Length: 287
Image 1: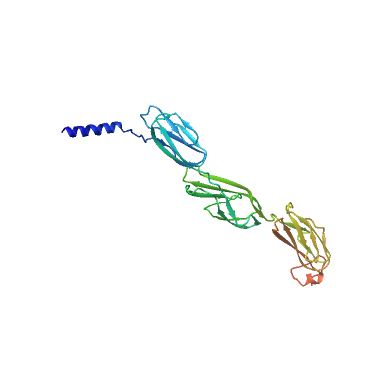
Image 2: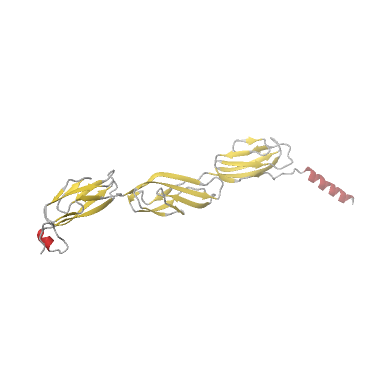
C-alpha cells in the first residue's frame, strides 16, 4: 500500500513539474500570395505575449496582425513574454504572385485574323489555378488556358488575361496593350458620274468619287480600257470605244491587306444597241 502511494505521489509531481505547451494559437490565413496580411489569435490563460513573425517584425499584442511581403515559409512563434516559454508556432506559407504571360501564333495580319493563344504564365506549383478569362479588346472574350479567337475587324487591340486561384491574394490580371494589329480596308466604296455609267455612243466621259476613308490607305484604279491610276481621286476617264467595262478600285493598308470594289461602265453604239430589243438609245430609230 505504501509503495502504491509513493508511485501515485511521484506521478502527480511529474505532471505538476512538466511544462504545459499551449498550441491553440491560430491564424486566419496560413497561405497566400505576397503581400499577405494575416491576423493571429492567442490562446487564453497567458499573462504575457510575444509574437515573432520571422519576417523581421514582432509584437506584444494579444491578437496582432502581420503583413508578409516576401515569399517563403515563416514559422511564427508565440511565447509567454519576451524570452518566456514557447507557447506554440503557426506556419505561414507565402507565394510570389503569378507572373502572367502568353504566346500567340502571330501578332499582325489581315481581317478576318484567326489566332491561337497559349498561356505561358509563371505560377508557383503550390498555387492551384481554378479559372482563366481572356478579353480580346474588340468586345470578344473566352475562357480556358489556350483559346482560339478570330478578329473580324481592322484595328489595334489590347489583350487581357486573368486567372483565379485557390490561394488568398493570388488572383491576377494583366493587360497587354496594343499587342494585336489587324489590318483591313474598311468602307471601300466609290460611285461614277453618270450613275449608272452608260452611253449609247462613244465617247463617254466618266467621273469617279471615292468615299473610302483615306488615312493609311493606298489606292489603285483599273479602268479596264488599258488605263490605270494610283491615288485616291482619279481624273475623269474618257471611253472612246464601245464595250462593256469593269472599273476596279483597290485599297491597300500598310500590312498589305487589300479590298476591291467594282462598278460597270457600258458604252454602246447604234449598231450594238439595235441588236438588243430592250435597249433603246435616244434619237435612234427602232426597226
